[in-house]
Amino acid sequence: MALFFLCLKLLSQFYPMSVFSQFDFKGQKALIRVDFNVPLDKATRAVTDDNRMRGALPTLVKILKDGGSIVLMSHLGRPKDGPEDKSSLRHILSHLQTLLDKAMGHAVPLDFADDCIGQSAKDKSAALQPGAVLLLENLRFYPQEEKGDPGFAQSLAQLGDVYVNDAFGTAHRAHASTAVIAQFFTEGKKMFGLLMEGEVKAAEQVMHQASKPFTAIIGGAKVSDKILIIENLLERATDIIIGGGMAYTFMKAQGGVIGKSLCEEDRLDTALEILKKAAEKNVCIHLPSDSTIADNFAADAQTSTSPSNHVPDGWMGLDIGANAIEQFTNVIGRSKTILWNGPMGVFEMPAFQQGTKAIAVAVAKATADGAFSLVGGGDSVAAVNQFGFADQVSYVSTGGGAMLEYFEGKSLPGITAIQEK
Image 1 (spheres, rainbow, N blue to C red):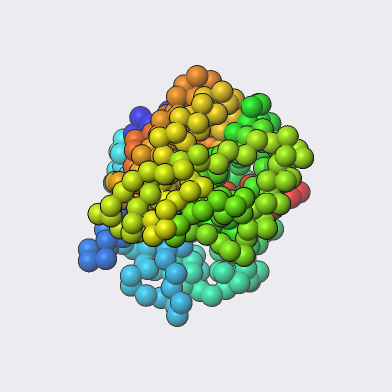
Image 2 (image 1 turned 120 degrees about the vertical axis):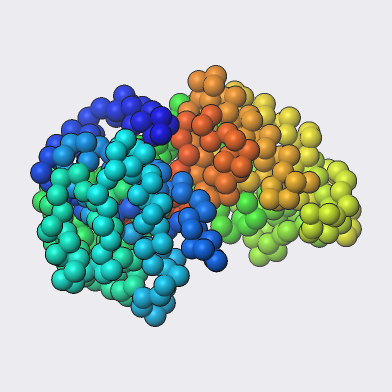
């Protein structure tokens, strides 16, 4: 648990004036929107990855140590027709108990409400004593949650004295519990939790306070998924590294031969337009000079190497090559601010993970040398965790879609709702 208290300490050092850190929760019932949408084993329903739950612990610990009580609300899965056992938050209760007990150093009173609104939720919330926690049933068992229904939000709001949003992963959704609910709490009684606070400030540091050179590393399969983020970064970054499947659309757009590598034929003009805009703004676009190629999209495929713009017929690029690794590592090494969103190849397969792993090494080294690095996006986060570099970068975001929309320049309803006076 030392890691969580270290996170709490670091946040208080970097952001000492936060509303949450200064608020005294003694005698207050905090209604907290967390993101406990964690994967469960299909057979046992046991939690298989508790990163999101552990990420919320510093917020919960602060409130409990102040002498407050906690009502937790979250979604789990995508239930379509009301309550279903596989999506019940009851399945995470024992794991949450273990995490809380370890974080606090003693047994924490933890209860479960089999509904998120209604009389049972009201009664259990009203009975909460200081130092106790109540977990509500899945918010999405009600369609009103995703519809942003004000009446549903008001029913939830009645369960707490203070509203805390600590679910950055859902901040881009205008749902009842993430955005609409804030209007039922007065200023000073609605705030970000430590996780959300850290996410927002790390993102703002990259997008609005970046030290130069600022390198954005953009990977993934499709140009279409990253057009908006690249265009927004053209206004801010000094260098943009492009890897993954999307790189081959850029290669073909410039007349390259890419074999059967992934390519969005309808985005060739878009790729050329991005390159043109980058040149006009003196932003250097870095494409992989060479690739690790395969004769099939499979872990046991035959592999070889080739220039990225001269992939033989019947072959496809599935990772960046050795020259590209050196090229990208040099760019990252001279950077003062780094944003990483998207892998360099099919890193889930051992034969095609060297490029992504090398980027992780380079980002970690640049961070050790003083750069600020933010890793955001599900695959990038999975990669730094898989390769063991999560604690060697400045910040790892918990919100894939939310972080992506933020870097696209969009307003996130869950953030706006708290910031509005």
